[in-house]
Amino acid sequence: MDADTPFTTGLGSDFWSGVRAALPLWLGITPYGLAFGLLGRTVGLSDAATQAMSLLVFAGSAQFLALGLIGGGASYLLIVLTTLVINLRHLLYAASLGPCLGKLPERWKPAVAFLLTDEAYAVTIDRFRRPGAMPSRAFYLGVGLAMYTDWNVSTALGLALGSLVPDPAALGLDFALPATFIGLLAPQLHSRAAWATLVVAGVAVLALSSLPGRLDVLTAIILAATAGWGVETWLRHS
Amino acid sequence: MAQAFLILAMAGVTFLTRYLLLALLGRWQLPQGLSRWLAHVPTAAFTVIVVRGTLAPQGQVDVDPHSPYLWGALAAGLVAWRSKNVLLTIAAGLAGLWLTRVLL
Image 1 (cartoon, rainbow over the protein chains, first blue to last red):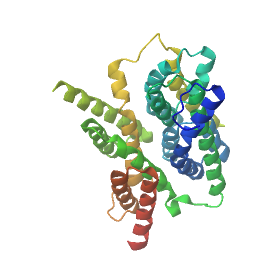
Image 2 (image 1 turned 135 degrees about the vertical axis):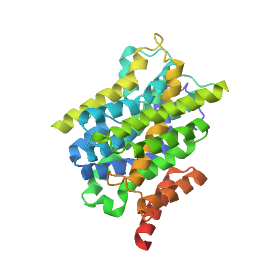
Image 3 (image 1 turned 120 degrees about the horizontal axis):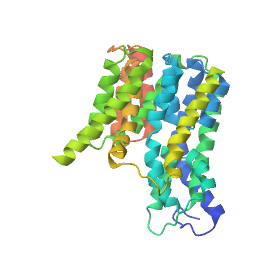
Image 4 (image 1 turned 30 degrees about the vertical axis):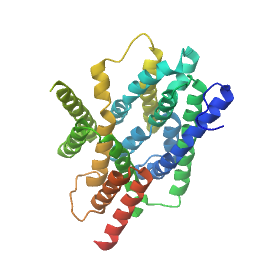
C-alpha cells in the first residue's frame, strides 16, 4: 500500500500506515533519545528514573530542559512549572487536531492525549490536510505508538551505552542536545517575530543567569514568547 | 524517592496540557491571543536550551572565544541554516567541538 492510500481500508491498515508515516522521523528522534539516556546519569538521575521519564512524561524538549535544571540545582517545583510552560504548546495541538479526529469517544481521549507530541501532531495534521482524507484515530495511534516505542527504546539504548561511556561530557556528547535544538530552531525562523523571540530569549537567559535556583530559564521563556507575540501583534496593526 | 515524585508531577502536568482541550472539545476554545502567544513558546524554549548549552555548559555563563562549545554551535548554526537537516546539524556541531578541542 502506498503512502497516499486514503483511510478507507479498515482500522488495521490505517494503524500500520500511521506507523509507516512515522518511520522517517525515527532518524531524527533516535539520536535524541540516545543522548537523553546517556545524559541522565551525568546530572544524577538514576537509570530507572531516566527511563521512567521517557515512559511517563514522553516529551523530549521538556525532559532535556529538566536534565539541565536538575544539573543546575533547580527546585523540583520550578522544574515542574517549567515543564508545564514548555508543554503548554500541546494546547495548540489538541485544539487543532481534536476536530480532525471526528466525534472522539471519551474513552479514547486519554490515549490520544498521552501520545500527542510535536511529531505525531505534525505527521497527522499533514495527512488530514490532503484532499480526500477521512479522519482516522487508528492512523494517529499508529504514528503516536511508533514515536513512543522509538523514544523509549533509544532512551534504553542510551542508558546501556552510558555504562560504556562513563563521562559523556569528555566526548562532547553533552553538546548533542544544544546541537539538536539548533537544527530544530532553523526552520522556525521564518518571521521577524520568531527572530525577536530568539534574540530576547538569548539575551534574557544570559542577563538573568544570576537569578537563584535556575529561575532564569522559565523567566527567559516567558519574556521571549511575549516579545514574539508583541512583535507579531505590532506588525499586524502597522 | 524524591525523583519519583518529580517524574510523576512532570508526567501529570504534561498530560494535563495534552488532555485539557480534548476533554473540552466543542465546549471551550483557546482565545486567539493566547494561542498566538503559545505559538512562540517552542522558539523561546529551544533558544534558551541552545544558549545555555553553548555559553553556560557547566552551569555558569562563560563567554570565551576559545570555547569548543561556541565553535561547535557556530558550525551547527551554519549547517542548520544551509541544510535545514537536524542530523547534519548535530554532526557539524560535534565536529566543530572536537576540532576546536584539538586545535585550540
